[in-house]
Length: 398
Image (tube, rainbow, N blue to C red; front, side, top):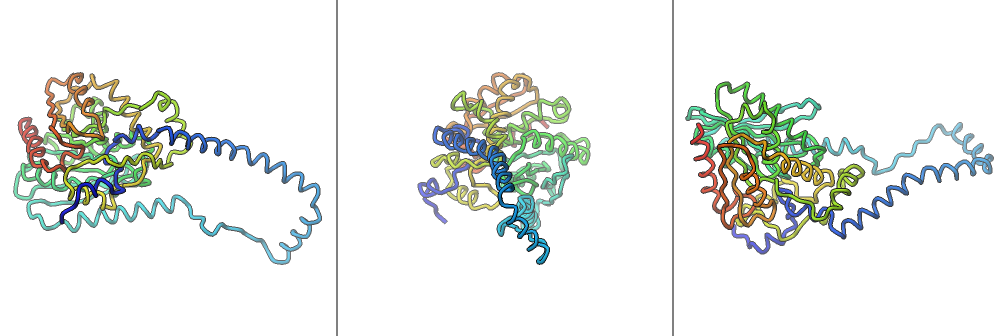
C-alpha cells in the first residue's frame, strides 16, 4: 500500500524512538510558562490544607447544633461513605495496561511460526526490584550457534520491532536475545515512563548474566539503538560486563543530547521530582521523521506497543542524565565497537558518535556515517546494506 511521505510527516506520531529534539522542546519557553503555573498551583495546594483547617475550626465553634443533628441522623441511618464515582486506583490502571501490552507481546511471539529457520521464544525475567521484564530469543534451527547477540531497543519502542534483524542474524549463526526495558513493550511499568535509566542498565546486566550462564563458551556481542545504545554503553563501562562482551554495535546512539538552555539543568530535576509522569505536549516535534520509508513509518506508529504520546518529565530528565554521564566517561570505554549514524539524523546528533569514536580508549573501534540516512537505520530503504555492515563486523571478530 502506497503512503504519501508528506502525509506521514503530518501524522500525530512524531514522538520518535529516540530522545530527538524532545529535550529542547521539553523545556521550551511556552512549556516553561506552563510549568511555572503548575509549580505555583502545587505550592497553593500545599497551603490549602492549613487554610481549610482554620475554617473548619471556626465553624466548629458556631455550628454545634448542626453537628448534633448530623450525629443523630448517622445514629438512625448508619455510617455514610462518600466515594468519587470515577476514583480508580492508579496502580490498577497501570497493571491492566501492562497486562494488555504483555499479552500482545506474547501473542506476537507465539504466532510467529512461519519462519522454519528460526525458533522464537519468550520468557519473563523478574528483577531484584520485583518488576517483571519481558524477554525473548531467536535461535537458528539448521545452523550451529557460533555467537550471541544481546539486543536493546530504543526509547518508546520494543524488542519485537527487531524481528527481521534477529532472523538475519540467525541466518549467520547468531542466537539473539532481546529485553523490553522498564515501561516498554511487555515489561512492567507505566508505558514509556522510566523512573531511572539505571534500572534499565542493571536489568540488562542481570539478564546478560543469565544469558551467559545458559550459553557457556560462546562469544557475546551487544547491539543497542538510540537510548538503548546509551544504556549498553553505560553498562559496558562496568568491568564485569566489559570482560564478557566481545564487542558492541551502536546505531544512532543517544550521546549527543545537550540542554537547549542552562536553566534546563536547574529546572529538569525539580520538574522531574514534582511531576515525574507529567507529559509535555511541546515535546511532540512535528516534522521530525525517523525513516524515509513510508511503510516503515506506518508500521511503527500504528503499533500499539510503540508509545506515541508526549514524553514524560522523568524520562526526559533521565536521558539528560545518562547523556551527561557518557560525555564525561566515554574515554574509559575499552570494548571493541562499531558505531553507525545517519548524517541526516534529526533525533540524535551524529557529532556525538564522532566524539565517541575520537575519545574512546578502545583499540578496536570503527565508525560509519551513512550519507543521507535518518534515525532508524534498520528501517530505512538501505536497511539491507546496514545489516550487512553489522554482520560483517561481527563475523570478523569471531
